[in-house]
Amino acid sequence: MKRIIIAEDEPAIAAFLDKKLRENGLKTSIAKDGYQALHLAFSHQYDLLILDLGLPGIDGTEVMEELRGQGEQIPIIILTARDEVKDKVSGLEGGANDYVTKPFSFEELLARIRLQLRQLTKNEHKSPRPLRVGNIILDVRSRTVKVGDRSIELSNQEFILLDTLMRHPNQALSRDQLLNYVWGYDYESSSNIVDVYIGYLRKKLGRDLIETVRGVGYKLRKL
Ligand code: CA
Image (cartoon, rainbow, N blue to C red; front, side, top):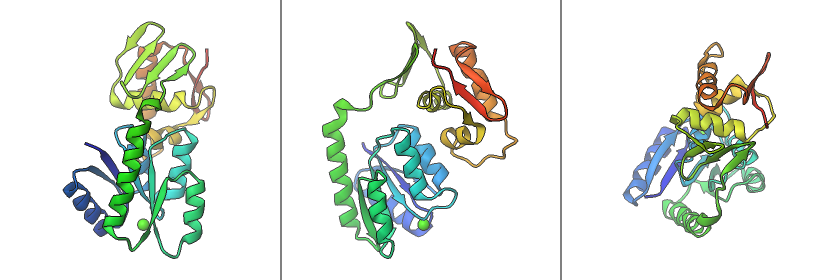
């Protein structure tokens, strides 16, 4: 069954879409803000993202930039108000696959969703490729991680954290960035959850791979 993220902050629209998509045999999760949308999309558990542009936290355009900037291929259909035509054009340039204007007809949206999902099935064999940094290989499809010949068992959050670091090798990522990508919440910056999980990864992968960047956060060393 295909799984859809509904990133929409208006409860009535989100509930309507949720109900109608389920009636049409799709599984759904609702993201109420941009952080949750990013979090769900980076979990690699979904086949399509319906993205409202006006979202609290970070808006839909920024969500799309983050996803595409990190090479995330999930199909995106933008939902936008009719008076935001300019946004639509820049949306498609920014990596959206399609757009639907509000107020929208559900049948039209569903047809566009089905079109994207059909194309996805056709392209499935060529994406996504396993990530490789040094001797670490992370395969999103099989959800496996290897360091050299050694298979590593990771929890869901550890897996997403490593995935995020591997998409930015040798680049310092701040604790806030990692929080947003991996946990999807706007945590208090005093929260040490990132440090705790970096500790777990170091234990499992080896001490030298993840470097602490003082005053910033962490980076994955490309050995
Ligand atoms: Ca909105």
